[in-house]
Image (tube, rainbow, N blue to C red):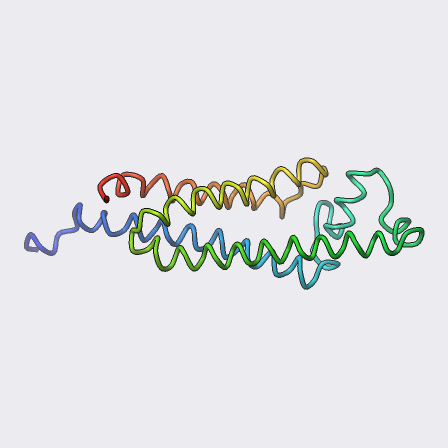
Length: 167
């Protein structure tokens, strides 16, 4: 094997950014898919204990039954459902936007994209995690938010040294 064919540092330099953008792509595509499900299939999106997520959030936060709310105040239940669907829409759009940034500018090594992904994902995942904690609705599915932000932070940490070398 000659010098050019040996795996070395140049191969690792190419592998790290590729791994990084794939991690962010998986994480943010997951957020887009979840947001789409929240917007389009609200009643079928499960939360803790396989309870529909919106019902679980309402019941855990208020201590009251969602079915009771639906009977006594159907317009309030409809309003809460619309708000949740809009939240899902925003998550879907955020995920799609960050996927676009990831596969274009971040993949090319553009400095602004690194910062946009750091700030955007910190706010998006941070607010989702905070919301789940406040309404006491943290189940297995909600734990993927912790995995998602961890993947983003690992990817950005791996590429931070490369960012420092670019101007």
